[in-house]
Length: 214
Ligand code: AMP
View (cartoon, rainbow, N blue to C red):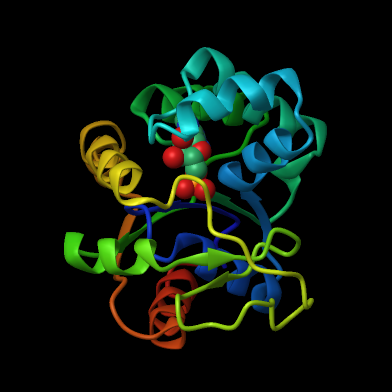
């Protein structure tokens, strides 16, 4: 089994949904930077308020703000000694390099970067109808009811899931995050998984990739 996995893929490719399944079924510890940031915003911390200025515009939070925050969080919670799944970090080559240095200092390394591939039309369709549970972070499509099936909390729409911000986020992904695909390919760590299909179909593909490389 792989110990340290980075999930890559455009917004709406299913990273969050699949990360929750991998956590529930395979025992990975999940670190979702988007969820951490949304929690900071909810608690109205100075960091959260600053980050929300970028998030609501569909832009990446600057490295000076986010990189230290995430790497400190990992070290403080001793996550390098867990089987960990990173959803949403790194999102730039500079972040990947900072992560690599931090891991080297702890004598650890990334085992795999899993890319969930999905085309632009599917991304738009998924994101424009998406709802999420603010309590357990489960993700639902437009045709779901008003409450989370797992914890009965009222579902909400993310503030950055509107058409204008979605288009911006896809552009930002292509320009700033997609270069990570080549970065991890060169290191021999990239595994590409087709993100189209049902949640269970995609999950099966991911498990195959994770288990074949243990
Ligand atoms: P997500 O829930 O992963 O889609 O993240 C939501 C938003 O949080 C992104 O659109 C970015 O604005 C911000 N964000 C999350 N992770 C990062 C990161 N590693 N670097 C910069 N911004 C980030």
